[in-house]
Amino acid sequence: MLRLRTVRQKLTALVGFSLLVVAVALFVLRWVLHEQLTHETTSRVQSSGDAFREELDEQIGDLEIVAHVLGTSNGVKDGVQKNDPAKVTRIAKRFFDAYPNIIGLASLISIGAAWRMASVMSNALSRVSDAHRLLAEHSQYHPVTGVTTGDELEELATG
Image (cartoon, rainbow, N blue to C red; front, top):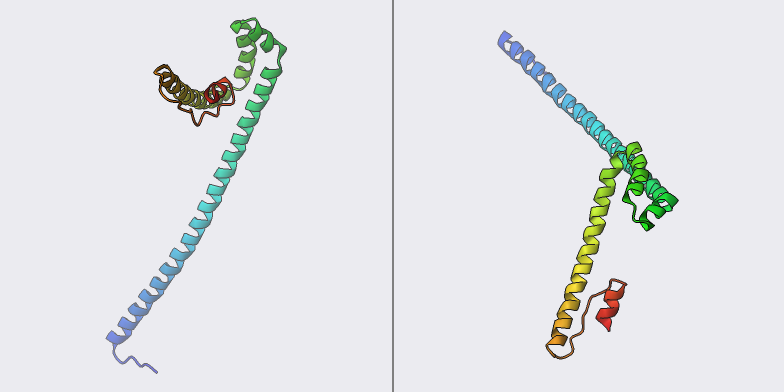
């Protein structure tokens, strides 16, 4: 058994053991707080992801409904066939007033689709144009490759 004989030894042991208890308590407290923070962060990230997916699904659903209704609307069909943009605008305005965020989402989707179609057509047209230039120069036969647009450009490229 350890026996402390002087007051100095006893005070040193008292302070040392107190510091040891504080150090252990701080370590345990740090570990507990870290676990709580990790759990809370994981929970919030999952909740945010779920909320984002739910909002995105709702926006896409709204856009699908509007596209279906506008696509099957006789008023829109008549306006397009008669080249009457005012009539189509009046019909579409009702939906844009009800769903103001659809304008941005529809614009982004339309721009992306238009960009993709333009790049596919531009590449196909440049290949066909190069092939026609070679034919005009009476060069040897040069097949046009990679034109898979599924329309008259592909037929023109394959001959």
